[in-house]
Image 1: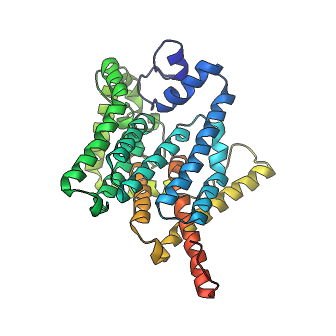
Image 2 (image 1 turned 120 degrees about the horizontal axis):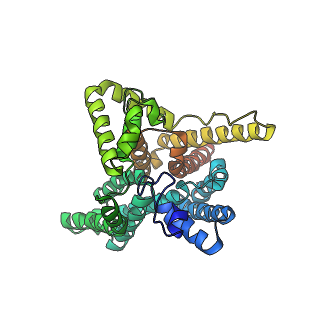
Image 3 (image 1 turned 120 degrees about the vertical axis):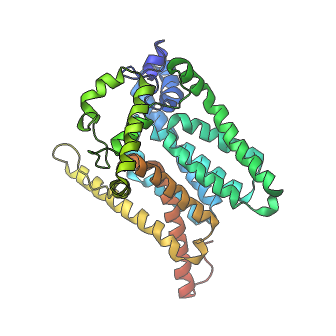
Length: 373
């Protein structure tokens, strides 16, 4: 997509689609780099590294807004900095590199709006959502957390319900304003102001008689024999037909849909115990073991935060809501362990809060003096 844009063909993927894949990462990251440095993957990977460094800083900032002490903020940043996939995935051209700092930015804004609901923060939040809409629209599920933050906002900083409504309008309006150029382009090229044309496709892959909960090829579904003919009707029409097929299957099989949704949640948070291709080296085996250990420790520490009354507050509830709605959107479509990576920084922040509280509790029990905070 970035290459075709620079060669004057427009944003076009390798299959000739105009809006099948999210365009934010190729347009905002890859195309500028290729324009300046040529199509050199080293610079793309360096850009991924810079985005990763930005994510570490944002983890620290979100932890601060969530009420973490200096120790908790540093612990959260260290967890994300040392989490193996955050480094290893840097060699891949994944949209998640851009999604992660953008999502952390929206979470920071949501926490800020809950404490200081200002129009400036609402506008910034909407702008981030606008970029996310083009980069990875599954993350738009976090809008639910932003609305919840405004509902839970400090009433002393608000002037009646109109202020609530106005702030929601600023978030939504700014989001639409930022995403509108891409939607206008799609209206001209495809005849519909869509963000992308893979919604119906992905919904069908996750909800059809052959669905497993994971990604499957469309050739393995009942639509497989007619897929090529359907593609020729256009991206928008093909997506609509597949969406209608998926909705019809869901309405006809509500129990199977519910069971499949729960299975997708399990896949989404499954242990990273998969194997690579071929016989793994000793180093690879050790790294995979460390990754598994990290995942278990982060998840365990995050869940432990609920054991401590000091961490059962609005800020922590909002972080869990973000994790929950991001999981839920993948339960509707299809799941895979890679797709949970944008939620892992939030889990790391919750883990840091759990560690902070555990240390406070131990110090209180031993009577050794002041808490970490």
